[in-house]
Amino acid sequence: MTTIHIDRDRLYDDLVYRVDYISAFIGFSEKDKQLIRDSAPVVEPLIPEIVDHFYEKIFSYDIVKVKLLSSTDYDGEIPDSIEDLDLSGPLMEFRRFMLTKYFNRLLNSQWDTAYLKYLDWVARSHSKTPDEGVNKIDIEFVFLNGMMGYLDGIITDALSKIKEWDDDTRTNTILAYNKFFYIQSDLFSKYQILDDQRGVTDSIISAKKSKVRSLSLESASSSKPTLLAVIASSFILGSALAFALKK
Image (cartoon, rainbow, N blue to C red):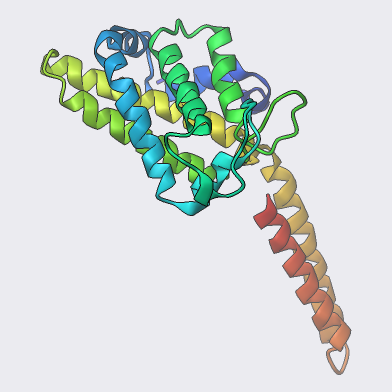
C-alpha cells in the first residue's frame, strides 16, 4: 500500500489543499457531491423547517442564544438582551435568511475554489480571528461543533423519511451530508483550535520543565530547600499549564 505524503504547513496555508486532504481521508467523493446536488428537489422544500428547528434549539440554551446578539452584516436594531430576542423578529428573520442561503449554495455548488472560500468565510466569520472587513460572531468551537452536529442530525432524520428514494440512494445521500458537515466543522476548527502552534507550545513547556528540574537540583544540593525555589517551581509549572490551556 502506497503511503501518501501530506505537507503539514500547507494544511494551514492552502484552503483547497486542506479540503482535498480531509475529503480524501473521509472519502468525500465527486459521487457524494453529485448526490447532494441531486437531492435538491427533495431537500429544498424542507429547508424552512430545518432552519426553524435549528434556531429553536439555539433559543433553548442561553450560552448560545446570547451569540445571536453579536455584530454581523445585519443593519437593523439589535436587542439589548436575550430576553428581548424574538424568533419571529427582524433579526431572526435575517439569521434564517443567511442559513437558508447557506443550504441553497450547498445544494447547487460545483465545489470550486469560490465555494470553498465561501465555506471558509463562514468559519472565519464565527471566530475571533483578526480579519479586517469581516463582521464576526465570536462562537467557541464547543458550541459550533454542537450546532453542526445538531444540523447534521436534523437533516439525517429528514432524509431518512424520504420515500421517493430507494434504500441505497437514501443511505448514500445521508452519508454524503454527514461528510459535508464534517468538512465544515473542520474549517471551524481551523480558526478555533491552533494546532499549528502545538510545536511551539510543546517546546515552551519542555523548556519550563527543564528549568523546574534545575531549580529542584539546586534546592536538593543545599541543606534546606529554599522557599524561593518552591515558589519558583510552582510558578513555572503553572505558567506552562496556563499557556497550554490558552492555546
